[in-house]
Image (cartoon, rainbow over all chains, first blue to last red; front, side, top):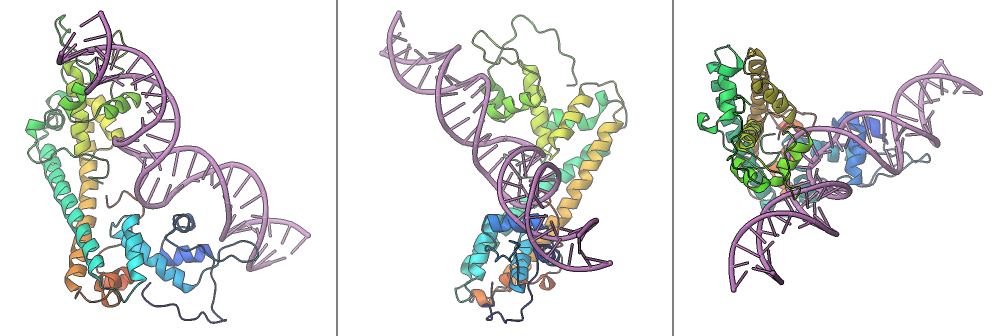
Amino acid sequence: MKEQKPAPSTTERYIGIGELARESGCKPETVRYYEQIGLLPSAPRNEGNQRRYTTAAIRRLTFIRHARDFGFSVEAVRELLEMADHPAMPCQEVDTLAKRHLAEVEARLARLTAVRDELQRMINQCAGGSVGQCHIIDVLSDHRLCHQVEPHGGADVIG
Amino acid sequence: MKEQKPAPSTTERYIGIGELARESGCKPETVRYYEQIGLLPSAPRNEGNQRRYTTAAIRRLTFIRHARDFGFSVEAVRELLEMADHPAMPCQEVDTLAKRHLAEVEARLARLTAVRDELQRMINQCAGGSVGQCHIIDVLSDHRLCHQVEPHGGADVIG
DNA sequence: CTTGAACCTCTAGTAACTACAGGTATTACG
DNA sequence: CGTAATACCTGTAGTTACTAGAGGTTCAAG
């Protein structure tokens, strides 16, 4: 992360994976998973083979969690962490990554807005009769009745 | 689907899975997958064990594809198909399904809008210096700098 | 010392496909 | 009619980002 670790004092408190998870807003399983895929460094273990963490881990995990909340992919988070670990470097790459992500978010927003509008139209035009007269089914059956929603490819496009 | 199949004329043209896929805007693998999970009925086979389809399959698959474009889950599509297959029934369930989906879409839209706004703010405030001064990294490091984006749980929330 | 919570590893499951490997069928061309 | 390109077949594994569970160990409190 941004701050270089101050030489850990001998009195530094170590916490377990449960407390780390609570502090940073995720589950112990997720923490282990992040360690497994290399987003978090392998934690030191105590005598009984349990992971011990310092507050540096809380900061790193919070960063990860927060970037994920923004919708950055795990691979993007990996890159952001790599950048954050090198505070002297120019932040152009960070900027580029953020802008690319913003563009994706905006594209999703546009699609989702079109979907919402069309859903609303469908629902408003349903007269409440039988399925045979239902405008919702009509729109889904016939793309010509739909004005805005275009086909997409892939499961992650809508969300 | 809505129309009961007119007794297939002896001159009806049969098409292969590739043409069906092209006509309905998906891939042959996806068609086989939909058959496997029961969204499409098992297609009759020719002498050489290849699937043969009629235009009814094009309509059904188009319906599926279109509903998926709207973001309905496969399970929701299954229910919609079941309803569409019974045109005499009241369309209240269709309506309910569509409204529930609309509510989900609107929730997603709200989250995504918050993400977009915050991303824009982050990017605008980046002065273009080093990573150490980068506002983007700051916001990701410290939730207090972020005004709108809240934590979520689950991979599908943002998209 | 015992009990219950927290922790460990490993495996499998989720959604909705997509991509291959290794083989067969059909079709077009010469 | 032969052959080569294309389309098709089955079955399995990979994708994303986790989550859930089995079956066992360790820790902290009383």
